[in-house]
Length: 162
Image (tube, rainbow, N blue to C red):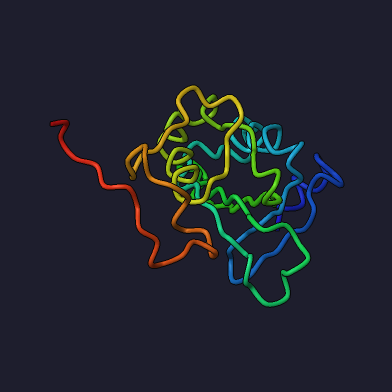
């Protein structure tokens, strides 16, 4: 596909792998090139990805065949209104080094999406101005969408101050 060819041509080895399946385009990007790739996707006229549809993460801790690889993937779903095309970008991060640069300068909606990923998975976004819990209360311990989060874990009870 032309979009994936453009990314491989422009960024070379920073595009770790690509996949096209039934019109779904995916590129895995090296973390140190992530912000440059995202900016290129947003500002390059031929791509014009003006909408960040979603930003999420996947925990591969117990996924067969991924035991030796990075634990998390941060996933960006991009869409171009003018060109009517989509792209999925992924960046792999290790558990003990789980951080990527913020995309807020490119898409302001990333503010809320990055806070949700931090809250649920514990992946940090460097440069985010207000990285705090979004869905859970501040006293909550852990990140509940991690595969090793105990389903019967008791959390501190909070309530009105007496």
